[in-house]
Amino acid sequence: MPPSTLTAEFAAANDSFSKLREPKMLPVVPSRHVAVVTCMDSRIDVFRLLGLKEGEAHIIRNGGGRAPDAIRSLVASQRALETREIAIFHHTDCGFTHFKEPELREKIKSAEGPAIAQYVDSIAFMPFEDPAVSVVEDIEYLKAHPLILKETKFSGWVHDLESGKIRQVA
Image (cartoon, rainbow, N blue to C red; front, top):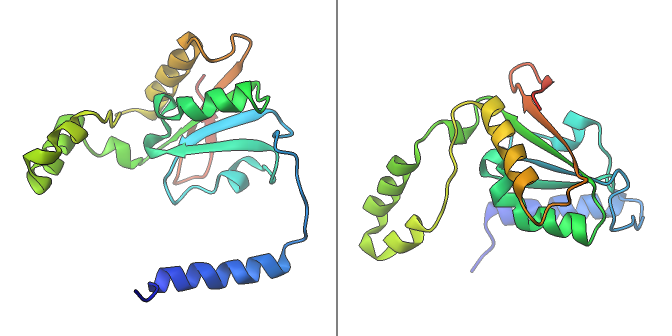
């Protein structure tokens, strides 16, 4: 099977990247001991947004930037890789504010048929309406989670995509 155009672009970009990159082996433990949970939205460049450099933070991304979806990564980040602070970032105009869970389930089931219903029903899509509210909910979820270290420092933020500004909400 011939590679897709995107596959060829990835390979060419990596070839350029690897030639220009100065070899450096950063420690596996992030130097700022922080894990950032944020959305997978392709409009967000987390490193530029927060002024972070390679090796400083764990960046955990998923649809909506939801903490329950990130728990496996956060537990490993804390217990194996020494992060002690968690920052939750949700944003305006998030795709996860544009649908309701029951409607999405039905849309997928209608398109794919009854054989996949059990798989669709096993997924918590976790849409939300207000990013400031969902950030607080996620921090409360993490504070109550038995595998998150009790001494963890938390902060919660909303990123306004239009202005580029972040606002602390928790």
